[in-house]
Length: 428
Image 1: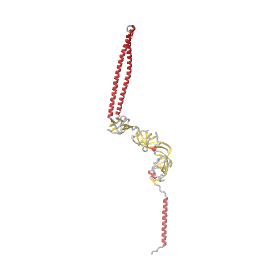
Image 2 (image 1 turned 90 degrees about the vertical axis):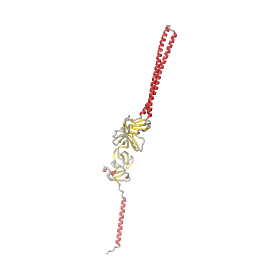
Image 3 (image 1 turned 135 degrees about the vertical axis):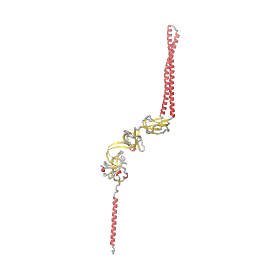
Image 4 (image 1 turned 120 degrees about the vertical axis):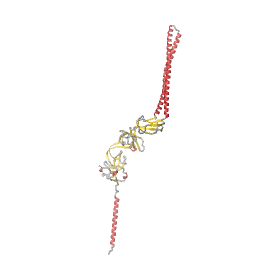
């Protein structure tokens, strides 16, 4: 038969339940407090995707880099000289030409007619000059004939006067008749002197008239040569040995004076036009050494020109190539240029981080010697180059730091790396 339990048993059971509840509450509360006091776990970052860099000491070359293109040192622009029409195109872009080769032929009937008219006027002036010379020479011969006749008359009159004077002295001729013959001889002498003077003056007059007409001939010739040159310019020649870069017109097109028809350049004389960010221009100077990467070889160069104005945040810097061009180099080829600013003898340096700017302080993650974690540190930078930057404080020689973009972890003081980044363990 069943024996009923007393009140003592029920009381003990209640005390046990209360004790269990108190212990459970105490354990749960202690665990909560302990959990609240724990620091959050460091985030884990894939180290294989990071770009680490080692702090080193040694010489550092400061340089700046810019993208650009190869352009001809000299470009011959071929403009239209007059209102005309394109008759034919002898060479297209890419054709090799010599200086005297015709690239385009233009036509202008008005210019051709003006050239023929100028040629006719020149020939007419030449004929007028020839006719004038004949007339002047004929007149001069007439005056010389008159002079010869006067000389003959004077000689006869002089002989007659001398004879009559002798006869008069002998008393064989009257003194009056002798005076008449002497007076006639004197008159012819004066006429002869005047004729000689007139002939001398006539020579000067002939010379002046011929020179005047010669000026008219020269003027007509100059006009003809000008019109002929303008007509010849309708055949547009290259002007230099090189390659046709552009032909900007088509057959039948009408062109106006000054319109650029074509461009010719020497493909073997190229320079590099680099676009340098305006924030990096303050230390660039003429004659600084440079290297131009054509993607098919690196060519030494030096700075020859710095453009005064900036466009779209960049400044154009021209570099003359000092070495032979690699095969395949041509105008408008994209290149990558590096200009050397200075050489620092002994500095603490590291590879340039993504956000590393000269003379600034940047937060980097310094990698622990075991390569399993990294700690956030502030690093002060100095002078910068394209790939390296000077470290003034925050890191020491032999330290490794993460150079890739870690902006999403800037709020973390420490991160775990798994797997380890590509660096020797222990910094070796």
